[in-house]
Length: 249
Image (cartoon, rainbow, N blue to C red; front, side, top):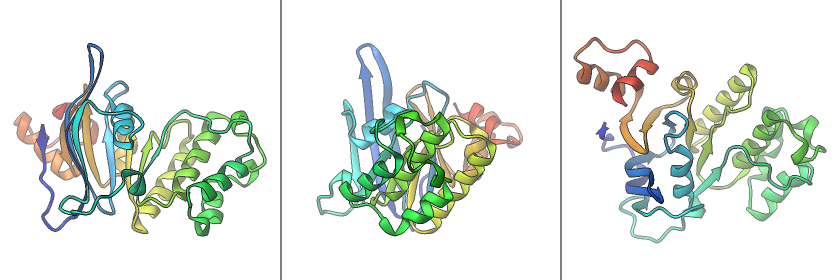
């Protein structure tokens, strides 16, 4: 793996080393290694089938990795429960499908100790006011995505893993969600989002983990990855992130 080493003054909240996962003879993740830094919007970039969802599920504890270390706040000797600092927002699910949206959001606030102070802002920013009485299971794909994002944003954990935050959204909704995610980071939250649309990732993310066939091909900022790609190919720096990704994977 080609990796840009983090600045020594940048705090890593999470470090992952040697994470692997196989399903029978199929290897989904292979010796994955990267870090999540405090207060960043980190993008997990790769095509469909690269292993992005498997990686998120292993990080969140939804399924167990076969091997690997998951270190919270490296160097801190206190034992920290993963669920106390990390919340996973999956893609393509409809939680509590027979319940109205307002019930689902209120349940998250109560059961998970969510951020009630953010409720009105999240509902407004994600344009959910007109959906609060609708059943979760009756929502369209894009509406359901906005509800899932709202649930995640209301959670108290400082790190959110969000699988495909723009899936099912139209252009205007995608731009609105980009602004919401960047606002969350500006308020001190750390976001790790998986994105298969490289143009979306280039606009919104601070740093990137490039995943290809279950392995991390490179990690760094856009400028760092561009320089790495130019050095690998011996050509002038690529002009866009798509060319950078193709050169490094």
